[in-house]
Length: 176
Image 1: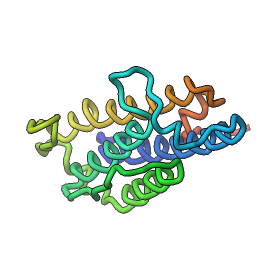
Image 2: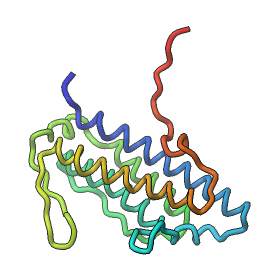
Image 3: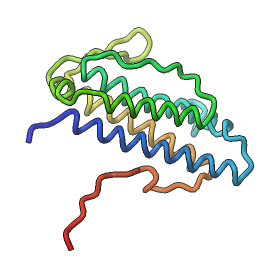
Image 4: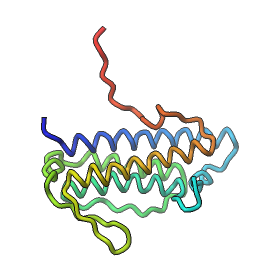
């Protein structure tokens, strides 16, 4: 079987974004139990020079939607990065998931050797072949921000574990 950019990306993004949504549910329950204003959780960070929780979720969704759109050869939807509640983050995740489900598998798979141009900081552009872009840039960035969002909530005391991070991964069952 040939390497499929679509199969290596879209299912992983859907599972990861679904896991993030589940983390938001647990953060809501934690905030209610501890009588914490839920929007306060959005501003927590692991270190002073790292993004806050809200930005980690925003960047994870951006990596999924922007990376996938670039591979598909289309413009990604633009989100305003103005979320101030867990519900608004949930809506952002849902919009991202809905967008990913519209993408054409053949268009993404056709990008293996195509040069992808993407922003790399202020006024800098990166250029990579599609497969390298996905494997060495988009997926590592996506997982970094999902893992950091998880780490922030865990650090705050939210009762989450590895299964919450992994989400609904497709597990093969063996016949009895």
